[in-house]
Every structure is written in structure tokens, then in C-alpha cells.
Length: 372
Length: 124
Image (cartoon, rainbow over all chains, first blue to last red; front, side):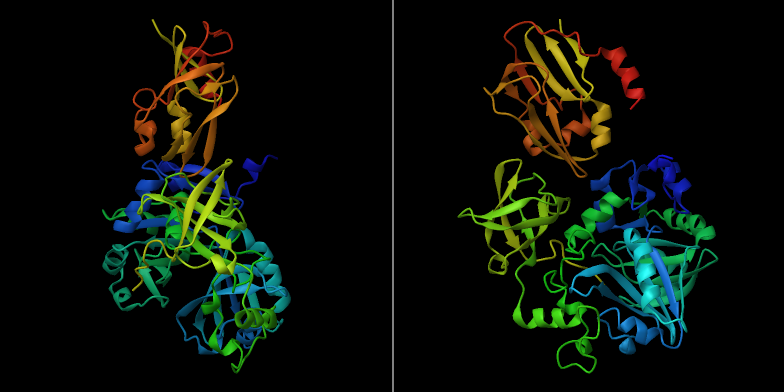
């Protein structure tokens, strides 16, 4: 069997093909990287109006049970006791070395009911890991009959409110049940573009109906994974496998804010997650590299793995993600550099195909977030 | 009179005596997607057959383009430094990349003609 034959598909696969998508393998799925208008147009459309993304390849994992909250808190630096019903937060599965197994969204759907959204490539590993860490008096399962759509961009609220007016009251990172086109959906106001937007979990069998309903709005266009990546890069958001991995700590990644106050030094639930002592120590003592934004005066993309030097020729660090920014019309990147170089204004040289290309350390994000 | 030939790397070569104009095909630009940067050799640069003298970067990926003959770069398409998307819009015309002067008449034996390339592309 070839790898092409082994690829999984999402419930919207047929629709992607019908819409003229260019399909590529991604995390074991045959996914749309772009549609006919191309990545730059799709990117700008999302920033200006609303883009519909199929993110059904991501893992939706439900954990229920009387001790689910306590078990989950032992695996991630969250304060779930402080998380109200229908509220979600961004968090991490850490490892014993203080690195990151995965980054995820966790939402409380009921007193003893949580749903996690994890990266597609880590889905199986996360599930096995959660199974080992969550006691058997709880239930744990992959919601593999649920699709996941994202509607992102400033017009997404207008579109969603037309279908379900009660969503107007939803704030950033809040969740609600609603009917869209007669289909029962679980919606959160969140996303991965830096724009206002929604993520919609719904039965796989009805995903195409809801997707077509959304695409029927003039403001909405189908957007592929190519623009999803350029949008999150402009928004300065981490991508697992690039800015995050088992060897990178949350502190190096600039994600100190993800460590809940109660899990920090002096908090009532101090540490208590894998690698917790190490991570808290890093917050206090500092780290040897930090995630930064880079901007280039030139158009040439500076991609993952590119080495950087100081103007004096000293090793400075390595690019974790880079590409072309359709909004700023130039090359942007994120990188890990020594802490003394991690302040905005630092001039560095990126080594691209043997040539030195000047880059400047800048504040993240490259394009301001517009969450509601 | 000039004639157009094609390589298996989806370049087109317009051969006019000893002057060869190089670009990429419509298939290539379509595969690359939105092109955001092109690095061209300098005028006067000496190319050896197989040198990957041109870099094309799209939103998705970087690609390098070889030239099948020895020659000297006579001119480059300056338009592409500010408007590399011209290659997407008009790959066979305004999106040309370099003109290279050869010392003698080129041996076109290994290159595909229009019909040959059409068949080749169907298998890609």
C-alpha cells in the first residue's frame, strides 16, 4: 500500500475537491493546502472578511468523570477548578524534562466534562498518554464522529449571528451550544489566525451541510492549510513541531502566561505537572534561548532551520518558522535566539543559501490580534 | 527564428540562435503557488551546465532552477524583484527570468519540444 492510499480524509473531502482545492498529505490526512484563488488571496480574505477552514483532522478528546478535573491538572499547568462551564483555555501537555508534548485547547462543558482539541499529528500519542494519566473511574474517548470547522475573520460574527443570534453574546474563549442550519453544534469563540472567529464542533454526517450554509454567505470563502499557516505566523502563534517540541520549554517559547497563577511558585497548587519544578525554576532563573519575531527588509522567505549570526559573526540561533507575510508584504519569521539578543531592534544575519540576509528582532505579533 | 524547448524541471527555453531566454512553465507556476521572491544571477555571470543559478520562492516552498548549457547571463528580468507574482500571471511571457548567451549553437537533442512536453506534463 502506498502512503497516498493510506491517507485519511475528513468529512469535507468531497467538498474540497469540488471547490478545486489542491490536496496535500498533512498529518496522515489528505487536506486542502489552497483553493483556486491561492494562499495570498485566501490569507487577505480572512483578514478582511471571513474564511472557513476544515480542521477536522485535529483531535477532539472528551474526558468525563468525578476525578477528571484533578487528573487533567496533574498533566498540564492549568487551573481547571477556576475554569467555568463553557469557558476554554489554551494549555500544554508538558513532559518530565519541562518540554512540550503538545499544545491544546481545553474547554469545560460541564461540572465533570472536558473537551480537549489537540494537534492532528499528536492525536494518537496524546490519547495514549491521557489514558495512562487519567484514572479508570473516568471516561476518555476520541470524538472521531465529530468534525471541526473554523470560521475566522472580522465578518465571522455577522455570519454566525445571522444563523444563531445568541452567539453575539459570546466572548473570546467562551463556548455555547447552538443550532446552525438545523444541526446541533458546539461553538467556541476562538481560533488560530489572530482574528475574531469561531470553532464549530459538529457531527461529521452534517459537516458538509453546515459548511455549504456558511460558504453561501458572500463574506465567506474556503481557506486552505497554506493560509492557515501564514495567518498564524503573522499572529505570532506557536505551531507544534516548529516553535514547540519535546525539547523546548514553555518559558523559552514565551508562554509563561500559560502557566496558571495557582500553578506558579507560591500558588496554592504550585507545580504538580510534569516538569513543573523545572519550568518554575526557569521562570525564576531564566533560560538560554527565547522565542522572538524577526522581520526582513527583503522579500526572500527565511524558513525553518535557517541559522543566524550576530553582526560580529557569532552564533545567534535558529529560525523555527518563516515565510512571506501578505499583510506586511515582506518576509517574517519566528526564531529561538540567546536571551541577550531577544530584545526588539537587535540586528542579526540569517544565512540563506550561503548568503547573509539582514533581519531585525521585532515584537510579536506581526499583525495585531483582533479578538473580541 | 526562435523555437521553444522544455526541460524535465518544467523550464522553458526560447532558443534564438545562441541567445536563450529562460522561464518556468504554467504547470510549474501552478505547482509552486503564489511566488513571492526570485533570486536571479547577475548580468555577466558565467553559468555552467547544471548550475542552479535561479531561486524561486513561493509561499509554500523554495525551488532552484538549473540551466542546461554553459553561457553568460546577458540580461535578467528586473521586473521580478518587485513583482515576482508576474511569473504566476504570465509565466511564458512577462514572467521570463534570464537571457543567456552561449558560445556556440546549443545541442537541443535532450530537450523536449512543445508536443513532447505536453505528454510529459500529463504524467506529472
